[in-house]
Length: 200
Image 1 (tube, rainbow, N blue to C red):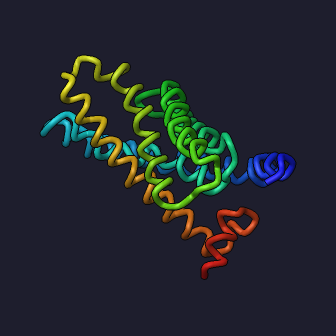
Image 2 (cartoon, rainbow, N blue to C red):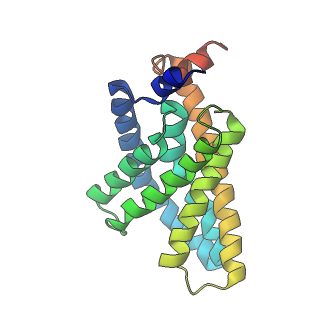
């Protein structure tokens, strides 16, 4: 591939920005709703065994993975996850503006995985890795901010469970959502939509 065509492939269009913003807002509303469901379930699991709370964390990682899978441009995962984090921060949540730092790290975790595959591979295994990657950086943030007093064993177990949750709730679910949207034709202006519809 020539450098010119590669540059064009990575250049953001107006439609990319608009759709990324819409995705971010939509995911932000999902996050806002999940704040209630996830918190209740997470607190219950935490009472049983603290690291189990990681099992519900993957839903908050969905934005970056979905944004990357659909837009397929450098920065898309970070952009969508940041917008998604901004929505509940503005509406109101228990974490305030610190949600933005969390969102930045989550998006960066997914972004790193997509970059490792040179923004060329978008199959389910990469989506799963992106969800797990988002979980790893979120884990770093949470261990430093909230769970520094945990034992090393609990920290490691929390990482494993959060990564599994990210892989499933952000990775697998994100890929299924992308394919579902593509099947409707709404993503026809994106390669992520055209490639799926070619298989139908």
